[in-house]
Image 1 (cartoon, one colour):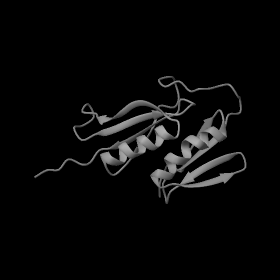
Image 2: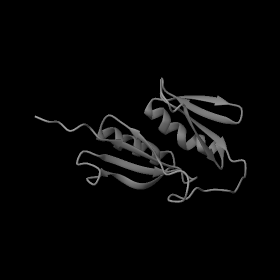
Image 3: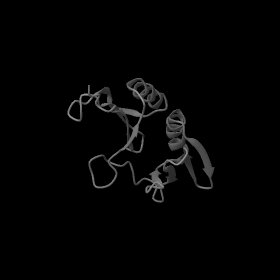
Image 4: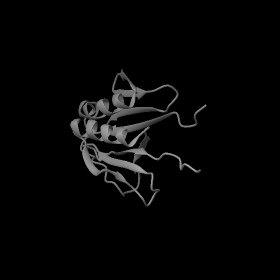
Length: 134
């Protein structure tokens, strides 16, 4: 059983949040579930991601590096998947923080991109295959 059950994210404009998150979450293989006042995405036993509208309109955007949210990383099967998901996010209105590239400071196999939505919510698409030993 997974320990992390769900992740709730507050956005300024729920409809805009859906427009930005849905293409990305769908491309990752998650199924969307609409509810009264929120929307969520679920895939198998993975933790559910839920978007909620802000209780205090005008209180955003989140600022990366301040106390609170840092980023959420999605592990994918290949560098090509990182590139594909980065392109999906760009087409959905996300902003590139870091284009896809190798991050040697993590490992010589760590390939990732970072994007932010209109609310300053940052996600990473990453591929870090295990080291192959002879």
